Image (cartoon, rainbow, N blue to C red; front, side):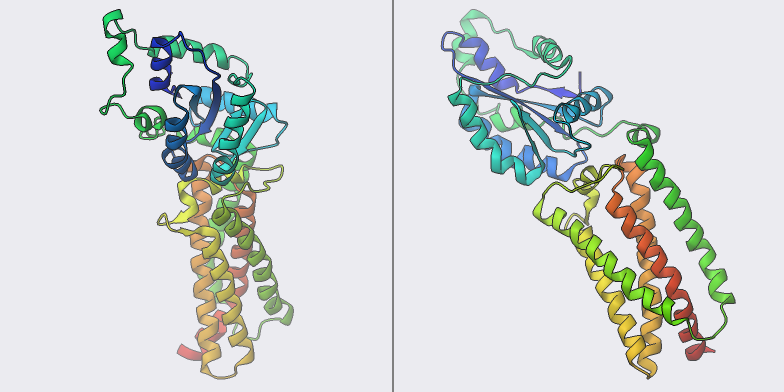
Length: 363
């Protein structure tokens, strides 16, 4: 049962001190080892709470990247009539909390509320409580009677934070590529289809660039560039808001954008949110487009070449991100796919003004 981890220290203390029953709050945290927001909740938010409430707070972690963990996660999502949800996803009583902003904001108050009501058991998900009981029987220590008093004392070598909240985050995801794709066949299939289209555009672009006639582009094609960039700015702005404010995204009927946005790949080098990078990119594209249209000097030609270079980089980076979704993360973000489509179209539209500028500068 390596997908399920119990709060061992809290359980052992309860076993050796059964004579003083206290209300207990029990909660379930669904997480993924690849989720940066999950690491934050497990490593920063839960340890102080476990230390504060001791045996009155029991939390189990269920790894959704494992098959059985995924089954329980889907059961929890259906229990609350949600179309989709991402991790970290915490269930306590009849409440659910999503994300590294919602959990620290609401969880402490919910603990107090349920303790005042006499405690609360683990959520009623098919087979979950039976699995917890079986796992507890396997993991619970059985001290000798003469050792019980000594074992009940705090031990510096067995800290609460490490025993209660590691949740197996040091484990690697052993699922295969096919397992990841199969987590969302529709959304991931759409990602793969778009990936094929983008690769086709990237490989055919040099041929089209060399064969384009040196003539002025149609006005409507030129004006499509700022229009599509504006749409991309809105999409990237929403993703930047989700990533920086750590809120749950509105995903729609296809894909699971929260899993993508809460993965370690949602930030470049673990620092810069991808949505913020997209915002900067779309602003830069519009800026070079304006210089190319409003200026009649050599600067306008270099601006058109720079716009082509930026959209080419955007296309290649979008190919990389789209590859990650089905084959590495195992989830697809509809917002991300929208941005990838827009960047592909911008690159295609930038080929002609870029070709014109190249001809005038170097031919």
